Amino acid sequence: MIDQLVEKIKKTGAPIVVGLDPMLKYVPEHLKKKAYDEYGETLKGAAEAIWLFNKGIIDNICDLIPAVKPQIAMYEQFGIEGLVVFKKTVDYCKEKGLVVIGDIKRGDIGSTSEAYAIGHIGKVQVGSKLYSGFDEDFITVNPYFGSDGVTPFIKVCKEENKGIFLLVKTSNPSSGEIQDRVIDKRPLYEHVGEMVAKWGEDCMGSSYSNVGAVVGATYPEQGKILRKLMPKTFILVPGYGAQGGKGADLVHFFNEDGLGAIVNSSRGIIAAYQQEQYAKFGAEHFAEASREAVLAMKEDIAGALGR
Image 1 (cartoon, rainbow, N blue to C red):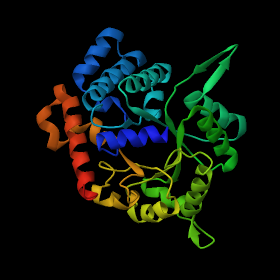
Image 2: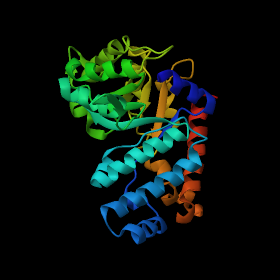
Image 3: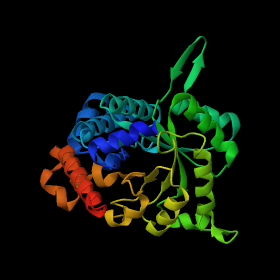
């Protein structure tokens, strides 16, 4: 699967993944009205509004980017109706030729990890038949249970040619409370990065591993260190845009081949129409504002990488 992602990045010239992390406050009023008129102010109505919002954005940016990253919590808040839309979004994105990274941040041990992996990137046995559950291409995984928690995911990745991104140094301000703790004279995130690289050796694509890492754009110096520790690891980089990361912060997340990283922006893209610089589009043209924001992000990253 990592080979497919790399090829799509090369084809689009955009090492960008758009986070489909919708909240009702991002959804324009005309879409909410349409959904509520049909289903009422119910969980189903809210989920329908989210679907209409997602579809509009996907239709307007799918030719510009290689991948999307729906965050499952934004759908789970609407219960079963929200999960139906999560699945609907995954399927629609794949129909549009996009790689789907399910941002689920799951982690446990043994059979529980295996069940998470099967549900999201594997197949479940039902009698004599096999079914894919949510069927993302990659998922995010919490590695802090150790090998017991990670190995079941890697097993399914190898069986299904899918991938995972393991949390190493996350973009949030308080990540250092745990991830920066010094063990044997080095921060914990370095130890985890080395483990990710080792796990990935058993799950290689052509040039990069199907076992990737999550390293926040808000920590460029740490990213520089981790890039050297994980030369064959593809890095998913959150924290661009709304969280403060800029193109200039990203240079060291990439390898000399210009690959090795994919940068996420969520509300900076999907809620672009609410930003002053894109206000000219208005709520009616929210999706066109998202497209403009993707183009600006692509230019920013290309400029930083000297392309």
